Length: 415
Image 1 (cartoon, one colour):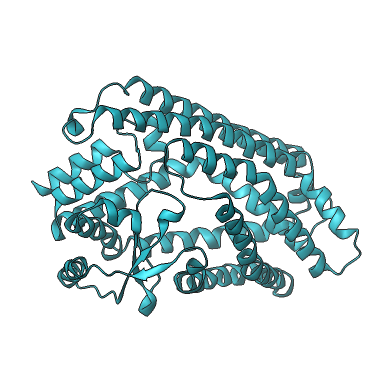
Image 2: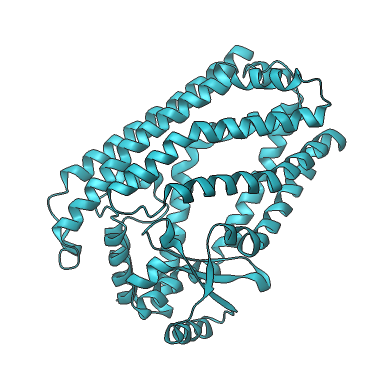
């Protein structure tokens, strides 16, 4: 049983790597073959030079993604197949501490090691790939400061959270998995409330939207759809990247609309309103509630499986771990879940794309389809998004419909 479970892990992890690399190659090749001509639907809006830049950027990202996937695979093999987690656990235990301090030493060491192992990928992506195509605005100083802030936030929030989970696992009997899942769910709601108020401002500055004309247009939209947002903010995203976006966050009295300053520089007021109408469509169509409900179901299922695995010696020995413990069970499960759920990726992507179509439909009805198309085309161009992704790749991964399909759908809704 132990060997079978070990080889199943090796097979699934390797299968995931092969699928990722093959799909990257398929998309790269598909985009490359279509880089010399702009699709007919966009010929009057996007010039050939911009189209070629988007193709070149996509090809570079696919190559980077393949190397990144292979690097993540190597790290995963080190931690599990070659016993890296067990070696770190034995080192933590050699200090002769009680169970809880040992767990905290182990988790801190693992977090630091993971950050160091992830640095080459992060540095290359920021200062080579994004820099080459003119998107990076992050300075080396800001990069280092961000990493220290991430460590600090992870320590302040993550360690107490991890400690509480261990206490639940150790002290609430065989039904601990139910209480742990409930605790996790409550924690996520707390983070939804706390993130925009306390965490996001550690990394970016948020100022009130001062464009009164835009504010008036936004309030007209909110009145039409019967929503009430008290605050509209502008985030200084341009200190890190030239990519543009907008989103809403929080819940209850703490919900707010946030615009990237890069987006406001690119789009006209009515285009911004249409993009916002799309984002608010997710709220009105209850996509967030539905996603949270589905997530909650899988959360309880996942913790139930962890509850069964926690008591099984095979769960540890099959993954080269010598000693059973609550903290090792949590860490192992965290590494294994993405491997076992990877085949569900296209299902999740399909569900997300369906929601995007519904949000576009909502935006057309409550704002302007033409303005939304105009905004999307500008965003595709400014972000160098490929207009010709591989259908196989997009169906497997894309959370949003490909450009041509999305524009065609919006036109059909407006008609």
